Image (cartoon, rainbow, N blue to C red; front, side):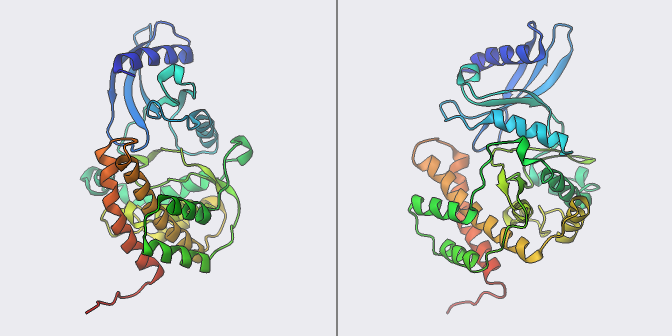
Length: 330
């Protein structure tokens, strides 16, 4: 779908949602980032001349629908639970509207690029508060009643990613070690909640007052709340910074805030297990995304570049399952 066609489709979608047949779409531009989905920013101008900043998220044209209508319902439930999320304007899974499944939401001003959040002086005052704010946001996510978002899967993460790696057909001995460690140290599910599935630095809009919105809910499912906490602590999401929670905070800041907000204690051993699984999952996801490019399914420099991260993740995984000095072989 060409940009002009997309603009016309957006005008129709937004006009229906706002009840304003004279609405116009201005300044439509595609934003960088988003390895699996397109993100577009634009202004909706009403008949009275007022404008609203909006964002379109959609699957690549031709991709199978991924249930963005359900994701919109999830975002609405999240807002009701106290999670900071963008307001939903319109959503649908019919490709006749915009070429693929989509969500149109209110634009939230702020920063999403981790290196800016972690290094720019403008965010220095708020960085010490971000880990605690993450704990509070995750506690709110885990309060979402599962009955309000029917259809969420409840997968066994180890079995699911074991099957993915087997299907990819690439030998990765380090990941085999990781799977064996996870099976040998399995932890029971504490409780079943709505899990965001990709809560991390890079999927948060941050302003000078802190976290303004939680983004990218496409991987949401049912599971153990420790999954989200462990994923946030995966080393890749520190982006070169030493602090273990997103590169901006400590375990204690995150967990103390989560326990206060949720009323549920955090088992530190379970958290380590989920951080280990999260590290393994990200390594396999890197292989998957690179394979999407190399297979010719979606040609993307970004997807291709992600493949080089696999060896970094293998090192991180070994450090988790075999802590201590790594022997130097002669």
